[in-house]
Image 1: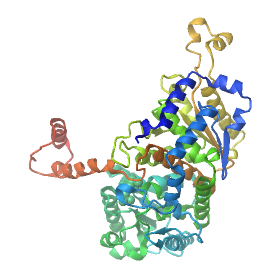
Image 2: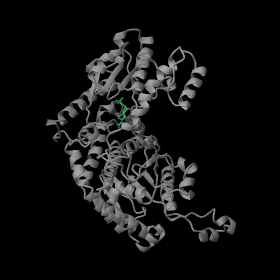
Image 3: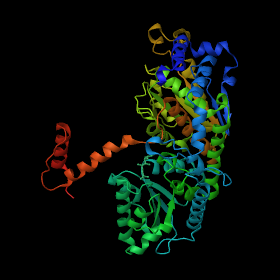
Length: 541
Ligand code: G6Q
């Protein structure tokens, strides 16, 4: 039966009409313990969801929804290696990447844990050799610059993790990430570096991605212009891929290839060999600590009753805000500058996973699916877009993320930072009435402008400190929340067919832009005219 026709969905619809008029001011006033009650701990993460627009009945219905959608069975299916990525007939086993060495997880009858551990050991040996200077560049210089070339899942996770863990990274080395096929990206990332000290990681699961291979060829040419010896490629290029043939064809020795598997989706791969740059930055021990953090959240997700299960709670609340309160977006607001790439990373994780309009059965879902994720670190966002969240006409649920202990003590600045986080969620929930504004001295004419409706929902996620462990937990929290939402909507959260059409069209258009003779254009009139205009004005090569 279609999701929206199920009695539980209809019960939620009726319930929403009954509670929609409730204001968080009233809900909190009626239950003085709500702030403590509606919170939960998972591994080292604390979630306060009391400022969501829900009652106990809402929660009960959402839990029933999860049970009726078979969430427990789906969770077990994922952990057991079932081919839950049905449209690609693949298992979805990022959880195996962070399982402990003594676990046994099989895909098609083969235990994958020994392979995972072997690649981790290979990465660790390589990282130690580069970091210690035992493995040097072609001319004997130590490697000081690491450039990851990849895009999408082979870029966003590693870049986010490097930025997030920068505090723990080798400060005497430079880490950069090239993703865009725009030559500006390549130029700006390389122009001040010495090829003798530079290692490129060509990171591509398929090793066929146009942007990545184009940049990898540009990197090889850049490197060879200085090193002038083809053998130097072996010292300055390594690959992360599932495609050994493609890697060898590019000229990288398969011994310098770090493998992963088709049961790891690109956007779920930052803790596989795709994280080689992360390991080079923070060292093998901290990388393993990050994996332990992921694993702790995996165990929490698999074993904790839904009522206290952080990813389940966050996933169900996201469904409530999206499908019943009508929120189209979610703002992710980390109050930690190291997490500045976290919203960008989450955009892929959430929107590529749940931006689907048909169910696993190929039927239209019948309701909204993945919301738009966006965000910026606090407090910067407060001085730009928070205005709309506080007083605009749209409902924007927020996830606030903060840490009790600062990594860079600077006077009382951390207290200030956290005071802002707490103040924002308080202001969003409770607002300020027109009467309060007037009582504070606003003229009747200005009181409406200076009042805040409030009743704007948020989650607050706190941990003591940003560490490799807590980063792993945070990422796994969102991964499993995304999965929970996908299960409710009955969609495949692990394919990404939506990126294909544009890729195919670009391949058709590229020769039309490059050809010397005027091409015969058979696109629509807009695309034809744009191509002609570009051809008239392009820089000749
Ligand atoms: C992620 C997607 C996509 C992928 C990139 C890069 O889930 O599959 O973002 O990661 O298209 O693909 P390659 O790693 O194969 O180059």
